[in-house]
Length: 280
Image (cartoon, rainbow, N blue to C red; front, side, top):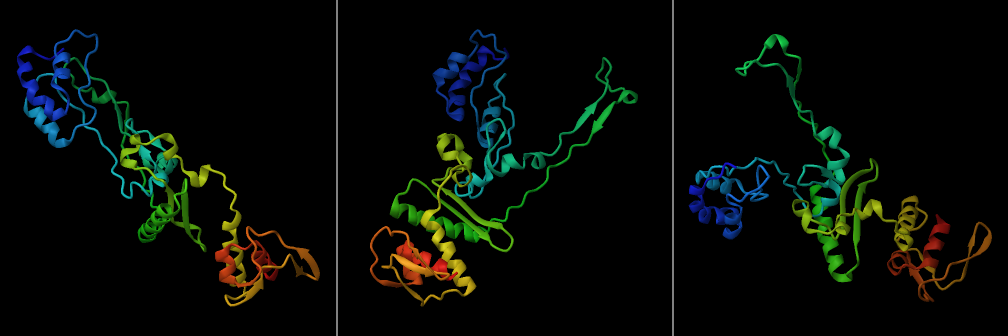
């Protein structure tokens, strides 16, 4: 061990810097151990590190460690993923693109003499270190922020188990916003359980059901098959389609009235939507 008894008097100054109980430090000091070293603190700010080193306690030192700082750390947590304490990428872009992001470490293999001088003529391998590539997402910061606000209001109002939002640019497929809620904070991922880390957008199976009615109405409007002013009798149990009378599905409640296209969508009428689909 490198610790010395004369430095024990400095432990009361070291304890608040590390935010470790003085009794814990005192118990470790000069205690018999087969370990070559003992961890006093997992993480320490740069300011506190310099305070610690200023005490000049023999045997007390630290190792520099880089750490990711994630922006949009909550709403984009499932998309970006994170690096754990061992710098292993977990989930999201971090894990998917690790091969391209990590770069290449340098390497030099050579021989030295007893005075630690290199035999340059025996230099074997030199690999120049290379930085990794950059990955640029198609997420639109403005749209992502607006989606967060809308989603938060919906969650507060309806109290669902979860909500997923995905906004794309139709002509290219670019993803402009992607949110799983509840989300976690990538900068403090260890404070959440495993269920919160799951990207429900791509892991969970969910039948679209009435959510798909918006696609039917959008397609009919886009094709000019209907207009917003068109109305359909949602009290009918049958309707004509290609010269045949076909049964209409039951509705979740009785709609014995005619409704416009927007009313059909907002009331989620099965019979109204099918009649719009017939037009399409």
